[in-house]
Structure formats: C-alpha cells, structure tokens
Length: 335
Ligand code: ATP
Ligand code: MG
Ligand code: FE
Image (cartoon, rainbow, N blue to C red; front, top):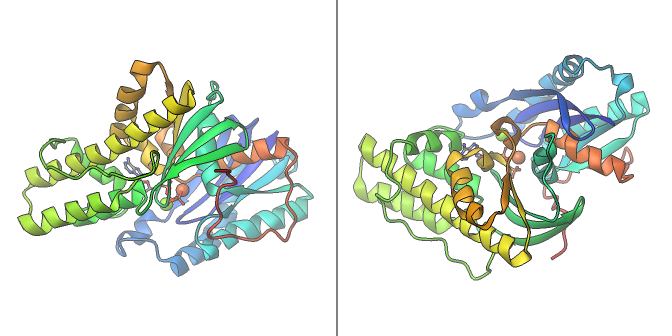
C-alpha cells in the first residue's frame, strides 16, 4: 500500500508518500511560519493564497523524492478537517483532481487522527489498547484506543489548548510566533519552581484547563513590570512545569484506570522535551510504555495523514468526489 498524503489545514503545505502505513518515503513540508512571524499568527486569507502557490510543487517534490510515480500510488489521503476552510479546500481540491485524473481512491482524513497516526510511522508501532494524549495548537484530548479506528474520548481541555497556552505565554514574555519551541528553549535556563502558578483543577478526572494558568502568567508579567532575562526564563520554566505536570498526571490516571500498558503522545506539543520527561517520570515506575513521534512528525506534516489514510484504506474506507472541507470536524469517537 503506497499512500500519497496531502495536508493544508493551517499554515503548512505538505505532501508525503508512505509505504504500508509505516515507512516514510518522502515528507515534504513548506511552512509559512516565516511569512506569518510579522503578524504574530496565521492570516487565513494569505495562507490560502500561499497554499495555492505551493500545493502542486510540494506534491510533485514528494512523489519525486519517494522515487515513485503517481501511477504507482494506491490511494490519495487528504486532510478534510478540522482546520481553516479556505486552506483545507486547497489541499482537498488538489487531492480530488488527482484522484479523478488518475482514477485512484480518495480518502478524507481527520487531521487529529493524522497526528495520532504519526506514532505508527516506525518499525515498532505502539500496541493496543492504549491511551493517547493529543496536545496540539488547537486541541488537548485524552483518548482511549482499543484498536485501529476504535476511539473513545476520555477528556479534553475545557478552555485553551496546550499549544495555544504555549503560544500566548510566548507572546507575554516577548517571544515570537510560534511560541512553543521558543518557550521550551527559554525554559532550559530557568528554575521551574521559581514562580508559583496555580494548578489547573477541573471537575472531570481527565479534563484539562489552561486558561487560569495563562492568566496567572499574564498577571505576573503585568505585576512585575519589565522582566529580567532571569525572570523570563524562570517564568517560562515554571509555566512549562505546570502544564507538563497536569498533562502527565491525568494521562497516568487514565492509563491506570484503563489498565493499558501503552501511552502515546501526538500533536505539536508532543515535541516538547519537558513533556516527554514528565511523562516518562510518571509512567516508567508503572512499567507503562511511552511512545511519541520524532519532532518533525509531531507538528503538521502529510506523512501522518498518509499513515492514517493507509489504515482507513485497508479498512475499506473510500470517499466520493463531493467530500467537503469541515472546519470543525471532530474525531469519530464515542464517550
Ligand atoms: P491542530 O492540530 O489542533 O489543528 P495545529 O495544527 O496548529 O493545531 P500542531 O501543528 O499540532 O497544531 O502544533 C502546533 C502547536 O505546537 C503550536 O501551538 C506550537 O507552539 C506547539 N509546539 C510546537 N513545538 C513545541 C515545543 N517544542 N514545545 C511546546 N509546544 C510546541
Ligand atoms: Mg502550523
Ligand atoms: Fe496539527
């Protein structure tokens, strides 16, 4: 099974060819991060136009790098939500045109399912049943997976997503967009115990809340006035410590309650070294295995879309050419 994946849900134009849902033959990503740095975030209209310029060259490069031809592709997997409607439509239209022109199956993939399936792009994929923590720019979900395609939502953030909190805190301490990697960098020289911050308490045993924490960071900045380098680093470290601690605590609880031997991380924040450490510290003593993709497969890419598409393709999923972009598409989960 050779799958061409296409992703354009936000500000990465990406295409990839993946064999057997596991082997990444190519993973082309044209990021618009530089373009949006001066705006401090993504401008949807500009992003859509940029995707339009990039989509065909990116697909061509992915197929060429894979050493494949379009004729050899078994199916075309494309993100059809969630994301920005205008940018989603660019990738979706390209995928439809290819599927129609080449007479290949079209498979619409949920972007979040893609993030999860980045974990399967390895020779030793995770084993079911498992608990997956999705931590991205727009989502923070705890999911129980009994098997491929069998998902149950255990909990989620009640307000900000983890990545969103990182981005907002980055701005508060004078760092640019996207903030996650820069907060992580700054936190390396800070003391995680230096600034007392509230723990995110929620009623649901597996739910998260990060807006209180974010507000506490903003108030600290206002109260303290211009921060010294030391204070900025301490604040970044303390914030990161609070976020990763809450994530690890509830993920461990879910894993123990469900009796799983495997936990996986997915989404951009899964690239965070402190989160990986906090998870290991929580799970290792219980002998629960922890998996996460390499950093380049944590943030938006098309290899993950091809990987998720492969399992849908094997399960017989096929979509018609009237498949639409769904900005608010949810995971097909029970619970
Ligand atoms: P979604 O997948 O929910 O639609 P998205 O596609 O914008 O949202 P991702 O690409 O999964 O999100 O991840 C981007 C987010 O991950 C950003 O908020 C970014 O700050 C965060 N992020 C990336 N690297 C790191 C890191 N090393 N530490 C913390 N956060 C990070
Ligand atoms: Mg992005
Ligand atoms: Fe994403």
